[in-house]
Length: 367
Image 1: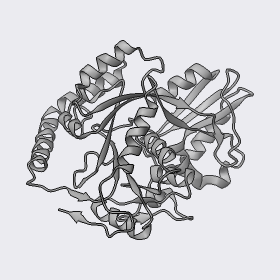
Image 2 (image 1 turned 60 degrees about the vertical axis):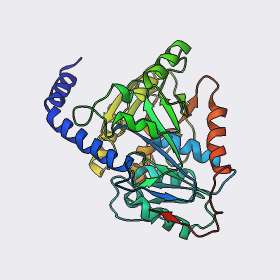
Image 3 (image 1 turned 120 degrees about the horizontal axis):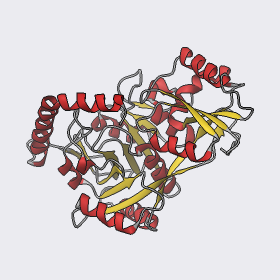
Image 4 (image 1 turned 90 degrees about the horizontal axis):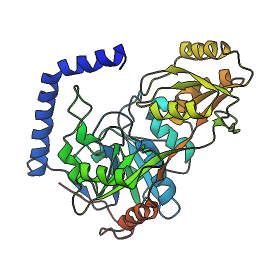
């Protein structure tokens, strides 16, 4: 353990009184919802919620994209996110000239990859959902991004993500730990997905983790690994494989870059890094730092790699990026133990068997 890591952990332990207070607030809040003293809004409409119990990256955005690619060929779907760190407030539906500053980096990523898909943002989901259906009345299902802990709206189908190396069962409330909700809230999930697993995860380890999570009888646990695609140029979309002859400058502002760094360590000649905070809004000075760091690399074969989430925040510098070999590394979930079809069937079945009015009927909210 390095000094910085030791200092951070020691500091977080000192914040235990705040963590206990936060935990009490969350427990009381959930008690009030569970006992119906606080009411969740229910929609007679298929809502699929993706979320986690912790702060940080568990793979929510790639899971949204997985569902979009799974469902979009069969159903008219939309996505709804909060729009974290955007410069606007309230409900917004992405349009042709929308920017990441208006809707946030992750919704902008969805909008760029799936331009025909209705992508909406709104802090108050109870307000945003009817507005989506008013703007896009043909919608047949909505994917709620990062909404599991927000109980003002009750989704019909909940997918809870937890990271292989940081299971929620072994965590504690913020700020001492990373939990933003109590562990028992996992009981509200229909599906629990253990993400970022080793691709060759053993069945014995799988069973051990299932025992640790202790799912209810009606819950199914799935396991996924990160599968990286071929990097593509941020502007031209031309692909560039990572080989042992290439040196890489990694530019990223994501919650958990460890898997990405390990991937580059295994495939590139070597890599250098410029780390930024999660959802970092890049400025022109950052771009200059990137250019200077890249120019300092003496290798003949060298490229810059960034994530899809970071790429949408760098696109505003398109003029300056014309001559820069900046490539975007796509990722997706790969289901292990041949469970992918079972997962797909459960999600598709939820929409197909949904007991509610047709999409053309008036939306009803029951409080």
